[in-house]
Image (cartoon, rainbow, N blue to C red; front, side, top):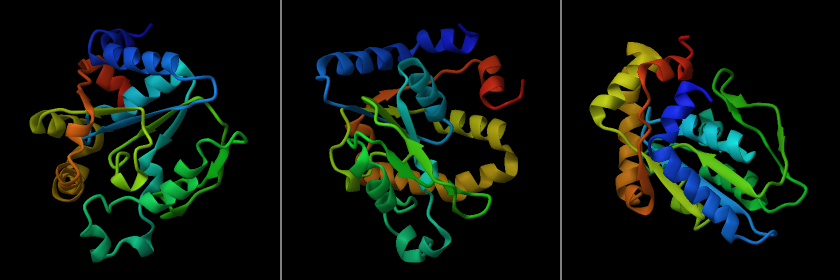
Length: 213
């Protein structure tokens, strides 16, 4: 087991694993367990969801694959709390087909080309994990058996984003994306609807997570 994984098991990740295992044990063979990994930028949502998906061989969906297409990026859309994601397409391509025994197909948004990428086929699985801010948008209804909110302080958030993305990108996080996420969290009381956890990563784990070693 890696140092990073050992560290995770010493903090709130162990709690998350227990909750996931309890939910899997309590559901029938024909029932699914859907898990939301919400939280602030830089808190460790992607890291946590990847660990869970690997451990439990689940499906893993990223809200980043549902960024708005260029034609959707209007002032009216951005004025919505939680409007900074294509929640309609996530509903149509993912939520409505999670129970399809033949699996589902969706097209992730490609930030490089600013258009939808190649189609991905996803098999039916008992456990589905949805990761990313906006995954608990009320548009989706009550689709989750478990909801986790990965949190950290504004100071820690700044340090992690600077380490991961650099100073230029941090300014965009600070001025654009973080305020939009915070308005969504506050408008829909997202923290209050989730189990709040932390991902306390040691420096060597951050190096591996952010590709520096």
